[in-house]
Length: 445
Image (cartoon, rainbow, N blue to C red):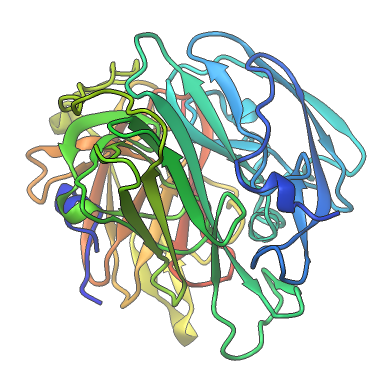
């Protein structure tokens, strides 16, 4: 595998049972209120005829129900922990205060079994986001057991497509007898990860000829890179990690997503009935999934294809930054004593007492991440969206990211405006490593 970074070039080039409930990402709750319950269930992750697996769910479905909110309007939800263990609920990609986002008490006890929490927030950004547990002691294991769902925040302006399709990709270590391996469970030798989309081991979307779809795609895995290839078409990328991007077609129809990343693509269905477009997924750890998007026999949506899509309205986030006056911090990745990996000079899997750096609210921050290892890593920075800087710090890529990929033996620089006060974690997740991520954190004052 050649080293790569999540640049525009790599984006363009690529580098009961629940059977009845798994064809879509759950039933949407009200956009302004609702009850969300985390509870165990059984799912047939390898198909309708396969053995059932014990999973953790939101609302009894894999993935959890799609939640809908409106930009700039209060969103209210009541969350109940129906699990046997403590859990938490965090909103990945949302630029809201750290306690509401689920990161305020970074090493607290979490939400106790049998208890209910009322959450209210006003999402400042329109886009595609994820909700899932975040906690150094239990979050990753619970995500690997199924706890993930979409949050869609609708903005102002006309729809950019005839229809939205939400595609949440997860992977599982599931044996033939249905036993699910996650976290500290050691799978048997040779058991490869198994991919699902919206809880199913297949993918089939049917529409009308010349219909325009907005595919909201999320990599819901904890430690896998997922490559999506759409054959015979060059879909347009219009948003990444919840933020509008410059609109550009994906060369060869390929897109690479890091763990927890989301991408919004526009694709036009073929103009002929029964014509289809193949979609292939690969998690670069041995698992693949093939599907299709097809024009059915219904009357065409329109007689001719639509023109290229326009850019989405920008969210209220700083689009430019003065790098000359930036606060700068270095967070190296290295192999320490006895082969133990370090992040920012430490081996913490829980937030340390002191932050890795501090920044004044409104300051521009530039992070230098020198990966001195031979492994790929995903770095997720919470509470903020970042720009991936060009090599000479003389500009940035035409999109924001919440997660960046660090290629082996390379240096990556990220820049952002520290506009969200509080303490925020930065996770370093080695790719294809089931251990919990290394964690640093920073303080915005």
